[in-house]
Image (cartoon, rainbow, N blue to C red; front, top):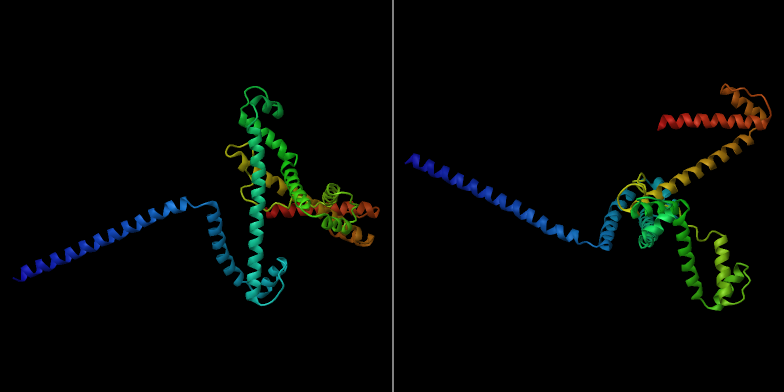
Length: 315
């Protein structure tokens, strides 16, 4: 009888374990089924909804980061964003608002650039292969894609993107000015010392004045990743050209920064007295004989060599 009871108990335990395993399996299958049901929703997410979701996630994460900053660092960040120092909570809100606007402006600018590049690519794609070969200066069995790549590269090197952006901004401004009445235009002309005659003349002269003052120069491109992409490589022509354009802009900015640093260094050396220049050169083991202009050139050359060594060590 005792043996029967033991067998009965063992059977009950086995049944219980089997039921638990079955329940766990059902729970896993149900969870996997729920995940599978979510996937189509993400796949069907529109670009606008995706942007809203990503901005909401960024807002939460960035707010947490900014709130965690020390007060001194927070004040410096606020100053850089044009936010007046005040209560920490108020500064955090205003900083997030300013940065959100920067992100929105960046997306709008990127959309403009993408639209311009896509429009140019579509215009070229509509042309016959014979015309494309002539414009690309290619002969033989060059494909349509190769011709378009060559033309887009040349267009990009000639600042085609910037020129198109400037022209687009000019057209928008013209339409805006044409919507104004003569009184408003006259006041605007008087304010900028522009001699007005009729509506069309006023619009043209305002545009001419604003163009001279670089009003329509495209903003500096924000840094983008994957700068190594080039038009010559395979893949999406538009994406490749956008990446190449960003890389080209960064190279130009670096060159300008380098030239500005050289000018600043030469001014610094010119500001030194002749004795100070000699002492500086002697301390670096360099002969210090000659006129001040010559010593400035020598000191500048030494400074450039030292900078090159420092860059090599840090690279």
